[in-house]
Image (cartoon, rainbow, N blue to C red; front, side, top):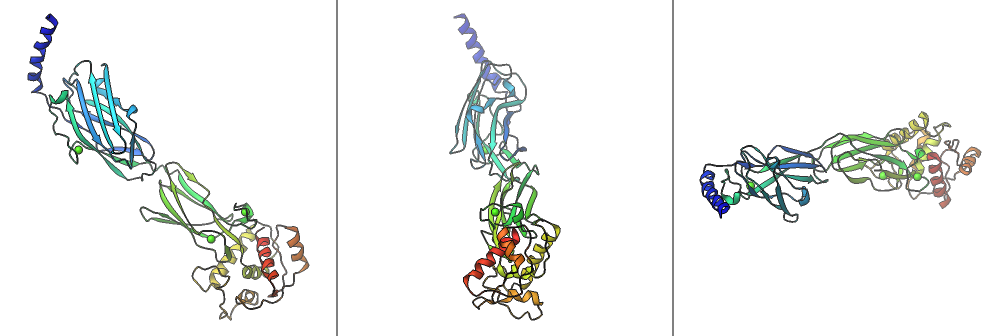
Length: 385
Ligand SMILES: [Ca+2]
Ligand SMILES: [Ca+2]
Ligand SMILES: [Ca+2]
């Protein structure tokens, strides 16, 4: 056949032309992508002259990258040609095999043979790097040599992605609160101001510290996506109501605002302490906040242990220089408490749930029976409510 003759003639010429052809194929090593984002990875060729087909194999780290085979597309060198792309991805092994064939040979020119849209894991950390290991490239079934030759493992053709994405929009926050109505939810009047919160980036060990504001709120802004440990320095005037350490992972642009630390009411000895020295003041006022801060300060100053709730530990009676009003908190655990006599004002407050600090409780007068404990808890609740 005439046509066949022509073809076979051109085929005899092609190997001769191929011998003059060399191609360099590689993946860029300056690729960047945000946490959880897509990064388009090209496999580039310096000169695609005479290329009609390519077989490309590469490996990637499945912990950091994911790849959808259907999203793989032919690169820029094939533009305008009828091109077929066949890609298979083994997502467990982290290997990709791509076959590309065109209806005609490519002209001279550089560009990309294929584009692989990798998605970066949400658990990736900014600054992470991951290698794209080009393991094999064959052009026209090996007729066009590839130099340097990609091999399994490290070589000059491999690519590198650096994880970026510190948008500064990540934040972690929450409340430290005395859950006096025991609904496990912080309400505005339950906030505990002046509590130190420490944030640690688990991977890097970097720490940040802040203090809760007048509403018991704390916030860490301008963070990077990472896993963090959040620690509360226990305000020792309060009955422990939950864990003092939390762990949380944030991804790009994420705001986590519910990392709360729950306490119960003021410990009875600190309620008594402050009832003698505070005046009537509405919840949330500056005076209110100042009072709670003062309680925190007093509690820290009189605590004899490092960071233990003071119910059983506050037995230090050596502080003979305490003021008269402070002595009421020094009642040792296990000793009978003096009888409590409520003033009319306090009694009314206990029944009305008014948002006013009760005043005029008589100094050091506690009951010896279990009611005293219950009443102390109620007083603690009152102070918060
Ligand atoms: Ca390689
Ligand atoms: Ca509550
Ligand atoms: Ca706590």
